[in-house]
Image 1 (cartoon, rainbow, N blue to C red):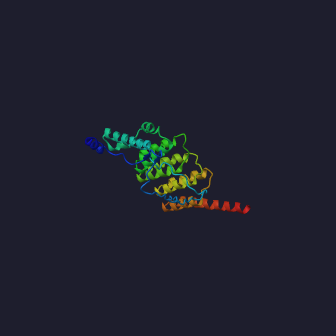
Image 2 (cartoon, rainbow, N blue to C red):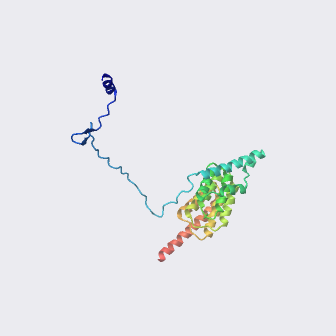
Image 3 (spheres, rainbow, N blue to C red):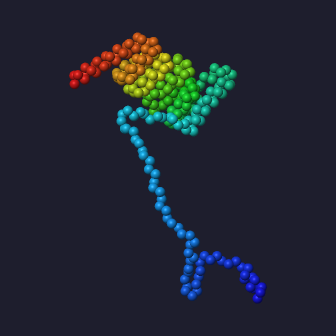
Amino acid sequence: MAAAAAAAASRPCPPPLLFFSLNRAKLTFPRPSTSFTCKPSPPPLLLPVFCGPRDSNRGPLLRGRTLTTEAILAVQLLKRWTARSAADDGDSRTKTLVDDAVVKKTLSRLAKPDLIAALNELQRQDQWLLALKVFEVVRGEFWYKPDYSLYAEMVKTLARNGRTGEIESIVSVLVGEQLVEDLRGLTKLIRALIGARMGKCAFAVYGAMRSAAFVPDDHLFGVLVKGLRRLGEADSAALVAKDYETIENEQFEKANRK
């Protein structure tokens, strides 16, 4: 008896989670020891959103600002191939020799945003020859439309590296084509040419604009005239100023006729 009592006393007691009463045949649950209260959730945070005016003065979207993996690999491959060519020949001057076939093969798989991003990155790194090759590939794509902002950035890159001959080459190609009426892009191009001290090229672009039969605005006239005078191109500046006066008189006479 004593051993049985000791064994029963040593058994663990079940936790008092629920109690079963044989007399009333129902379950009774213990009351929670703590009380819970529902707190109201804080109100949502409201932030103001400001929208700019939707008018015609809105500038174009900036393209090629983000480098994707494909664009980064293309830039690295082009730079690696150029460095390998220079190391094989043992002459630093051969570093500027880039095969067009290698460039086209490397860039053929890139989409339009990646191709523009690769061009911008090479220009940022002052890889002027590679950037010029990529620029030629961009101009040869089926989706390309004349974008004079790209010309302006290319002129800035070549000017930083003292490549005046290449600037004259791309300007001669541009002048030989049929210009489109993009006053914003042409103003950037003329400003870049003035900054590169290429006054004759800027005047050549202006001549192509006049041959295309569209009229520059006041801002473009002011940039060109002031820039030519600053570069010592007084004769060219006088011709541009005379054209501006003639155009102003014609527009004034048309307004009076109405």
